[in-house]
Image (tube, rainbow, N blue to C red; front, top):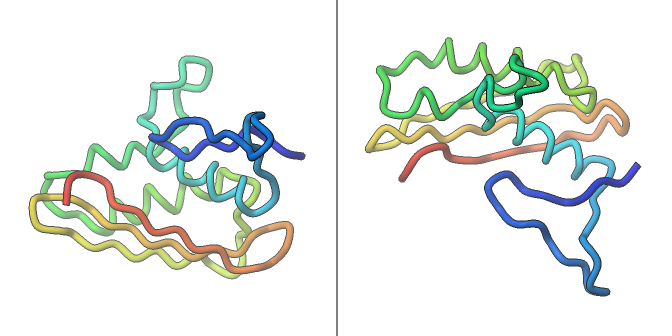
Length: 123
């Protein structure tokens, strides 16, 4: 089922016909995973445990195992992420405390490999 297309931190997108753009299938799954990882726990009043809050790790003493654990625990709460094969999570600490994350996971519906790469914090 289609949903309104919205990349975390951005504006809603307008479709060529002037309506709001929609997204479905794997693209919707990617948007949901990204939103979950970047949302702070407690920001959604109706679901206080939603979100990984990766921003909390920016500028902190590096604990890559903890960051990887938080990501893994949160992405498995999205139905779009298959449990097998195990997702690959790469984390790099950038100068200034920013964190770059690369995730490869299997889409539960299609079985195709999906990749997300994003940076949290200023680079």
